[in-house]
Length: 204
Image 1 (cartoon, rainbow, N blue to C red):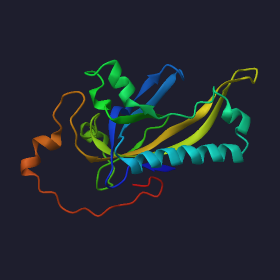
Image 2: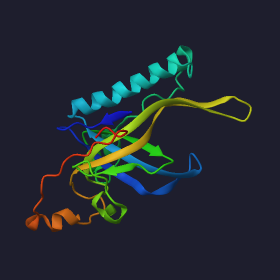
Image 3: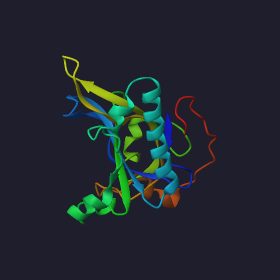
Image 4: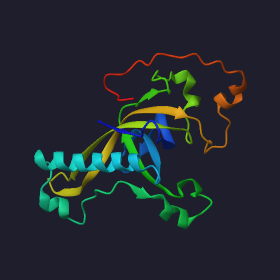
């Protein structure tokens, strides 16, 4: 499992389908998903992602999931991190939030574990507090895959990630234009210090 985001360098959440699954047409099934936006200046986070990808590739080779020849194939998809500036060039208004950023998608068949900045689980009745545009960290599992046909022929190979958990640390401008509840009540907030309850399986 890999933690994406540090105490000082966070990632921005986008396309946050984390409370209800959405149809993934490529996989032909309902899945939970998130798009992580990583500012290019956040060098430590960029390194976290590429280190996790390299570790997944090494593990795949060591366990015989892929061969070195397959890894060198042009069809092997190992760059799951996309350049946001390429999208920004397509449409500077629509993709303004991707300027000077990388981005990547992660999905899961199971609902991700959701945490606030105190490492307390966010209840579903407070799900409006986690939204596309907020900042935080993500817990992902990177692995290699090989999609095969019914005859056993390899159709698609590469490295990808599975979404395990998300932690909201800071508010940000919502992509849907709504006002966050925390912004509404900030003037009257009296936040007590809360002891961190570390999860055994999510490294926040």
